[in-house]
Image 1 (cartoon, rainbow, N blue to C red):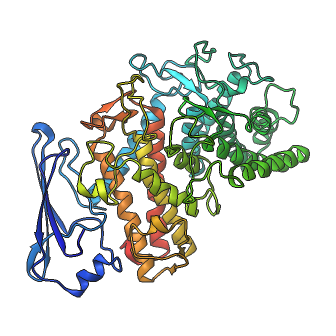
Image 2 (cartoon, rainbow, N blue to C red):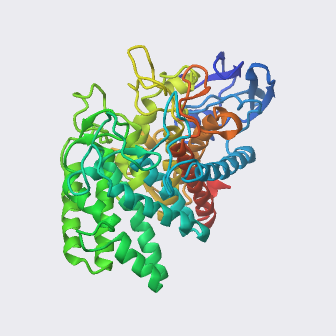
Image 3 (tube, rainbow, N blue to C red):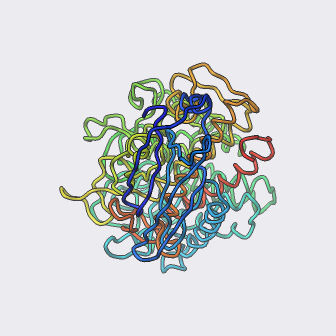
Length: 562
């Protein structure tokens, strides 16, 4: 786009954009510097004046600004306007409306999670049901992976002081002990049965055909329950210590009541073998699975040491090191630009390897400060940009010029080649944006911003360069400290970019805030399994990261946050 090209956009509805161009009548040095990237203003236009009618959810938004007395709007590299949510007016970036909606949806999501735990929903006590939907599609099962991720969200709240949630963690522990001891089509506890991906809602084995095994489940369950074990050990009462040593982590490997130990033994011996991915479609070595296993082994080694199981701790650390090398010391999981890909052999799977699984792996098993798998790791930031860019032009609901050709936020799905439409996979079906995938982007961005605020500086590398160039003109080797113009521009750019993904979610939420699995690529209407528990947990987690970000920006006196 020419530096002096000025646009104003009239959005006649959320699917159609008419763009009118005009030549700049007057040019000023500030405009030159803006378009050169030296100064990047907020993604939002200067002002919005919404007019909304409920009929057809049509929204007309006129963006205007002023420059040398001429009313104009500058469309910068990543300016983006979305239509209003159903029956609601559009709002500007970072507004109190958006803030309030995120908080409201987070509270709603947390409540909905508990509506879908057994026995409330008709499932076995302590079991997490993926969705109450029993047909078209039937998701009324309990998945090991989903259950661990949802319970991890509950664990976050427990360690934050919601002590009444401890009962939920204990019920989850009991339910998982029963599942571990249940023989199934993947095997029995001692010969591969822990890799069984899902069970019937009452806890009995699922005997249908499925993508077996899935090795991420035991690792994720171990991560969640290790946190619970440490919580109890930190409290330090006699009954707490006994519950951990006799039930959660019993050093006697012949005991059926040692949930964490069983999962760690499975993970340390089996995670190097191929398995099905978290989408249950392809068998290979998967980034998500290995990163989850790596985290489980690291946390498991620390817990084993704490409980005096030194031999096991040494073994888990050894396997952790081997797994880290397996991921990093080869080209299996890297694109040439240094970003991560999701599969070791994407060409065999007929996919590029760009997948939300990379972001979800970092969110589920990354750690603050980790130079490889933390939120500010150069490869992770590069992966975020590659992932988002892969969905530009893919979904008709995101068709503005800046969504197609710029850096504006777009709805995202599992991976670009997806054919699962929420009901079936076929030659004529097409995948859609997913709520949990779209919210993963602002979740990771907000977490990264917390890290940058804490560190007080931002370093640009060859690998992270394309990510930061979305927000400011930079070069490899640049270091921006808190208080500098570059630091403030990056923080502001990332903040408004994060807001943009939340605006998309707000626009296409289900009735009453209900989150489904997907929303239609053409109409934006929710589809697939309704009340998807994983979607609710993903949103609640992301909102928690946003809350932490706001507190961090204030405490570290980040000027651009005001």
